[in-house]
Image 1 (cartoon, one colour):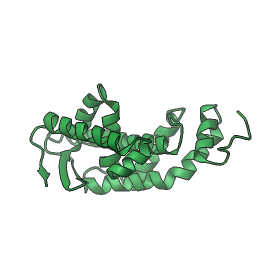
Image 2 (cartoon, rainbow, N blue to C red; image 1 turned 60 degrees about the vertical axis):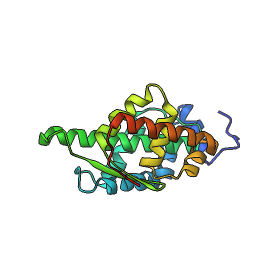
Image 3 (cartoon, one colour; image 1 turned 30 degrees about the vertical axis):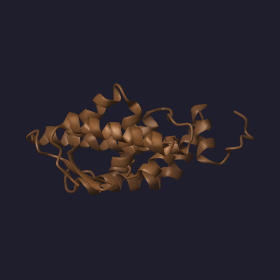
Image 4 (cartoon, rainbow, N blue to C red; image 1 turned 135 degrees about the vertical axis):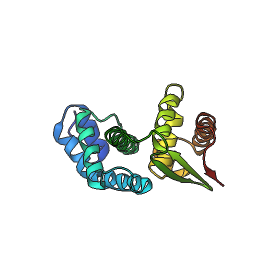
Length: 194
């Protein structure tokens, strides 16, 4: 790795070094994005209300552990890193909810509803059903899943999602429209307020 990279001392530079096997670079990345990991964790936990036993710090720390266990961070730059982190925080929360449902032998429905305020719509969705639907959607349209993750779980506007993903606003809107229609069809009668 060229020590004089134009990205030295930046998240992009640390990501380059981490992919080259530099373990201290992974630590630098985590140190610099930990406050954002906590923010995403807090955002997601606030939306679930009292569901689950996990606190913000525990969810953030679980996300960090998962980042470290991944061995490599599948991101080329800051925006890809934040998409990756949103996915890891989401997966940690879903795993916690599934484990709690199993331990408490709770009935399958209704359990963990999440309120998503997107543009002028409010979606009240069961997190487990939404996760199952996103897994199915991922099999044929990964980009639409990325848009849902950014809009629902990271709380980004359509414009901010476009910027985070490095896409045009029109391209992002196309993926959002498709994902929204797909979820409406897949999840049936969604509790949606206009």
